[in-house]
Amino acid sequence: MSMIDVKGIHKHYKKDANVVRALDDVSLAIDRGQFVAILGPSGSGKSTLLNVLGLLDRSDKGTYHLDGRDVSSFSADELAAIRNDKVGFVFQSFHLMPKTPAIENVELPLIYSDRSDLAGLAMKALDRVGLADRASHIPSELSGGQQQRVAIARALVNTPDLILADEPTGNLDSQSGLEIMEILQSLNGEGATVVLVTHDPELARMASRRVDIVDGRIARDEIIDERRDARAALGALVGA
Ligand SMILES: Nc1ncnc2c1ncn2[C@@H]1O[C@H](COP(=O)(O)OP(=O)(O)OP(=O)(O)O)[C@@H](O)[C@H]1O
Ligand SMILES: [Mg+2]
Image (cartoon, rainbow, N blue to C red; front, side):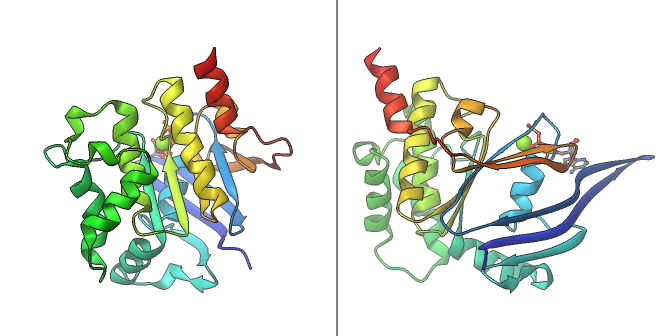
């Protein structure tokens, strides 16, 4: 059974007399443990697809089974509960609370869980992304790459099965971008399923599968045989 199984999903936006077919009959199955890179031109539907997969948005048509459960019929509250439990999001523009220390940004998803020791768990997540020594810094006191690592710590603090990253390296220099890719690859190595939207074909080669979207449809879907290693690429860059 695939972890993610969407069939025939459509997402159309009506604007004046026009209809934008953001997703147009997309079917996609993703197995647990896969690392899928999604590529495509601007406006092709990548973010729309990621938002549907992450239960932030619903499709107009089609079915979605997540871990065998038909989530298309779930209520908003049920979706929020699953999202909080299973899914970690990372966005291009970090989405951190600006006046709040890193550690409290990371604690946020835990506030809705029944865990205790929020600070301890948040510290562990910050340590995982190499930022234990920046826990008290607010976002403006961190570099872009560090802010994105805080966002990843926030995404992984709930130990989600599924990590969805929408152009997480889009605002970063190449070294910081590779550091993010290294973290995503190692989380994937520990069992997380990762879906990454990127414009960069070189970064896509670090995934285990590449899916291309054009005009809201899947144009290409292939397994990556010779997967690039983010750590090695980072070493080559830093060593150069
Ligand atoms: N709320 C909305 N109302 C109307 N049209 C929308 C809305 N959201 C997205 N669209 C349209 O749907 C299409 C797909 O948008 P989407 O954000 O998924 O593209 P994308 O592939 O993520 O692009 P980019 O690479 O620029 O981020 C676009 O043509 C966009 O203009
Ligand atoms: Mg987008």
